[in-house]
Each structure stands twice: as C-alpha cells, then as structure tokens.
Image (tube, rainbow, N blue to C red; front, side, top):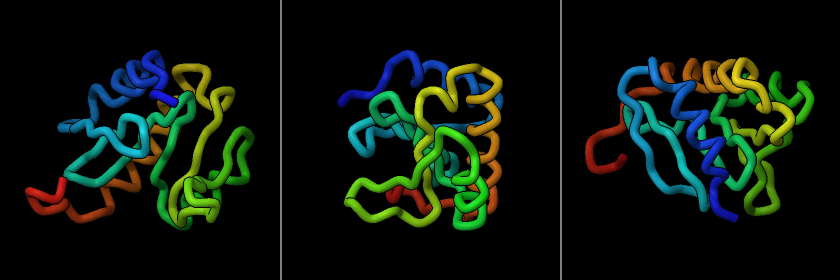
Length: 114
C-alpha cells in the first residue's frame, strides 16, 4: 500500500522547523531522517515512529498505537500510530516531536550510510 500522500505532507509540515531532514523510500513508504537516523515514516495510512525501547514502552500504553511488526515479530524501539491517533495536527506534531527527541540522542550516521 503506498504512503498516504496527505499524511506525508502533514509530517513534512510538522518537521518544517526541525532542521535538516531528508526523505527516503523505506518500508514501502516515505521515511524522514535526521543526521541519517530514521525519525518517522508514513507506511500506508499509518505513522511509524522510532522512539527507542523506553519511549516505545510508554507509547504503547496510549490509544491507537501498536508495535511495529513487519516480520510478524515486534521490532524493538518502534511503533505504529493508527490513523485516529494522528488525525489532528497537534496530535501528529506531538508524536513527531517525541521521535525527534529520540533521534537527537543518536550519533549521526556516516555519509554513504544514509
């Protein structure tokens, strides 16, 4: 399923003041990276967030979230937010800011690995 173009545009707007963000096709959708590290992605109509282990555990207690599980096994440190969980711009911004906060704790990836 292709990435929801409207959600991609909303994520771009939420990241507008985040500094240098690059985009890459990943997971059958569009991923947004900071210093080569994935912040979030739009996969179909869902928002994929990289939050780290602690952030993931906390986020999964919130409504409209579930583990990221492309392979049938939950991935550590990442979640999906279903469409109702990011339906409003303030809710989307709050999720994206959490993911940006985690990405800021990671070392930049070397050029060529982005």
